[in-house]
Length: 176
Image (cartoon, rainbow, N blue to C red; front, side, top):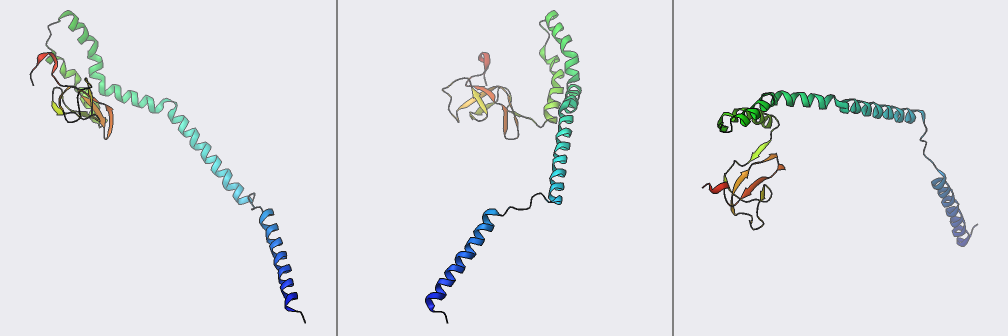
């Protein structure tokens, strides 16, 4: 019969042996990553990635840009066709009223509408200065001060594309 001390010793030896086997398995075990199925899946993913890269490269090689340019030209065609003639007329007839020229800019209004760009204010509109929306012509203007919009700005949703330029006074002594 084994003494209690012998049983404790035997348990300790068995425990160390089991611990040694577990340590060996943990430190020497490597997962089977080169199985045929996993290798095939990796190869398929690599091929899909390459196909998508080639597709993206083909699209960015100019077809999308060319489509964008053609569409934009079509929207601005009236302005672009008449602009050189209007410039020549302005040279020959410097007193030509500007109101006859504003019709040319309707295509710009349409383009801005198609792109969902919104104007920040209207020319000569009195507003409260907001440094997020406006660019001041003076460092003395504080948020909330009354200012006039000299040149409109544009935004695309929350993104400010160009801030409206503002001033305390209207140009050339014009009264608001």
